[in-house]
Length: 261
Image 1 (cartoon, one colour):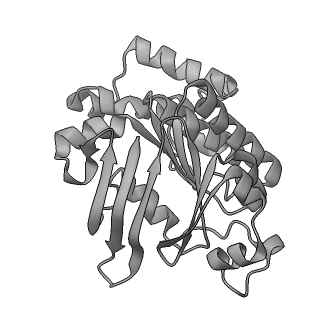
Image 2 (image 1 turned 60 degrees about the vertical axis):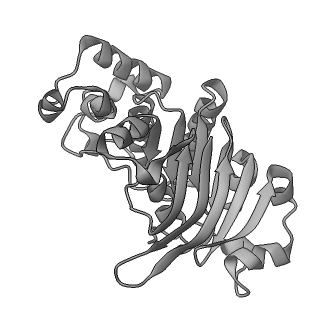
């Protein structure tokens, strides 16, 4: 279980990205974070695995304080928490297979990781991950030869290589069309259901949130302003919507707006 307690993040320029945020993610849950760009969703996800250092508060993973973990312990924690990025974060000039294998870097000796030397077992695991995502035929292509949807599948396969117990998905479909968005989220949902992998995901489109979330948290200006179940988000009132997106928001027009701080 993941516990976020009174999490605050203030950037060096004085921007307060998160303000006293607290919530839990139960094992096997698909929790979605919603809110406008700049509401703190990306910062929150990156604080969980300390890609960004929190200013105050605690992140507890299975009873271990992530915020206090030293380098060796943090490396062990990060093995268990995969991440899927909005802009894929692939090495464009490397092959698809090598990008997927990079998900094993936390498991190999540091000197081997420098030269990307992987075992036969790791390579077999990578091919199995690609097969699961339906892109084994792309294994030896350069990553930049793939479509956006295919690149995001590579990102999922890379996360799967960590054998994670949780996946953080930061706007994983923001740059994809609606059909591809559903396809990517279906793959993530498959891992959630079949592998009991917990998912903490940020999204914009309410129809996707209503389809995939088991529970929802809404952020506005870095604060939690909404908590709801799948049933409650489907029955969201206009007032609840405006609490998250502002008085000027129109429900049908809220969609992916790109990156955020």
